Length: 155
Picture 1 (tube, one colour):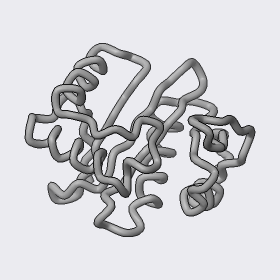
Picture 2 (cartoon, one colour):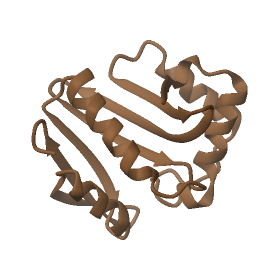
Picture 3 (cartoon, rainbow, N blue to C red):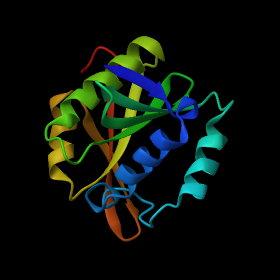
């Protein structure tokens, strides 16, 4: 498996990520739901260069896109998110394991946090299986969002 940083990907690889990100099966679970154009995507990737707090990766196996993982680090804590290739079932477990390993053993944070729409029961249950607990909730665009957290050694 390869974990590649977004900022080092070529234009073809960037377009591949963008196509998955804009897929309606993926897009439905993001706060930003408009179709993102390539120019907007490239501007976002450029904003990551030199940003020591944000890291975005693509996970591949034999050159096949498995998913995308991102982290925003703040001291002893990181927020993360991911999306898997919608054409490969069961990628959530792999992305979750890679995310936990990276957060706790590479970033060395003590707490990993995430936000998920309350209607996304499958993803909520996945996070719970890996030790995440619901620690709060908020409203985003009239939708209930759960705040979840996992501590180092607790998942």
